[in-house]
Length: 72
Image 1 (tube, one colour):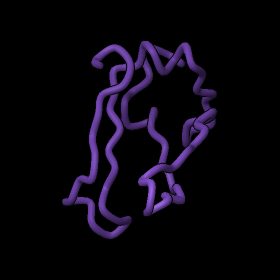
Image 2 (cartoon, one colour; image 1 turned 30 degrees about the vertical axis):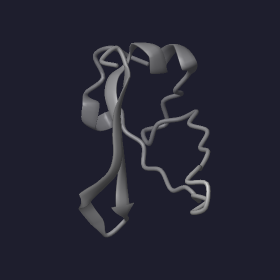
Image 3 (cartoon, helix red, strand yellow; image 1 turned 135 degrees about the vertical axis):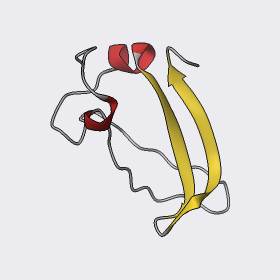
Image 4 (cartoon, one colour; image 1 turned 90 degrees about the vertical axis):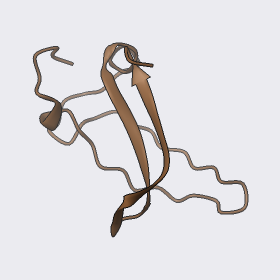
């Protein structure tokens, strides 16, 4: 991943099936929305976060939020 890449272009939208009983879901992210490959090495150096929203129509309600990479 290019370190000079603007944050807005280094995004990806996720849609996951979450098991409501266990609260678990799994997603494999290997490419950003702009077509750039996203590898493990990128995940540990990127300064970003993961936001989980209540629904795709309610972005005001966070279910979970956490930092990933360099800011973790």
